[in-house]
Image (cartoon, rainbow, N blue to C red; front, top):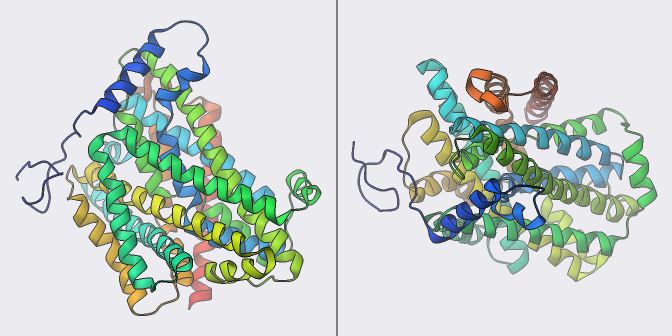
Length: 447
């Protein structure tokens, strides 16, 4: 097979993966990180900067359009009741993303590559097929979210919005040619826009902080429907594609051989995870709180779609509130769609040691969403169904992650502590069980 660079058109459909070219921004970041690692004493706040970034890209999966749907529905129907579920979900996300990052740092390989090296070939091919289907389903949801954002904000047909989304995400992905740092910076800006939008939404909606605090300290549910929504929020906590992606983002970002330096990089990465996932968790909480204080308190408990939520905000809180909501949805859809395409590349590269041109992958993942739009299917319902497909991929990412990070011969000095492995097993088992429950419930409701 030809080994033409992936950033050039032409050549075979499949190409062997080549490392991205070094850039000035990457070199400067790596140099700054090396200086920090060689330094002694307590690190200053500025020492964190070279290590921040991978978790912010991963955190996009936790504020994607699928989260908009579940959080808004949960807040509208049950008020502040499920705030504690979001906090629990976020703690799980922090643990799993920290393990994924650690795998890349310790082994120099991402999760998909580790599966290829340690599992039988038929298992690897099966895992790749499932992961590709899940990646396409996930990206379709994110693509539809961005298209909805364009339509709601600019009142243009959904099909035109879909094409505009495709162009914008390809431009975002084009930043990869300039190295990892520019893309990390743009994704971080988009996540910050989402966070700022919901900070403004919270200010406008004036929630009941006493009720929020009560939900945090007294976890409870209210019937079968609240359980189903709680499972939906918890079950969507872990996106399989972003587990594969996070290990890829750290595997060759800053390469060191010294075990002490690896441990220090991991400590910085934990801070990166806490900050990024903390922001994502606050955004999710703000979504639910906004829906609770705006819709639930006004008796609007049946907000069934993102479009309905957008339209209803205007008479309740004013035109600015609905515009802010639309901007946050657009930023969420664009960033998560770009990240989803990146994850698809990582999955193929890891399992098969092959990749396809980013334009081809964008086209493949874009087509299902454009078909959904063209034939007039309900975008929000399609979004929910895509989350059902997503559930199939959870075990294929979570189980290998826990297995690999608990093996000393692979992880060496970064191997999981026994308590960490035990907690990770419990979390993985809980998430898989909840996703199976969500899957069966959703299939029953669909058919």
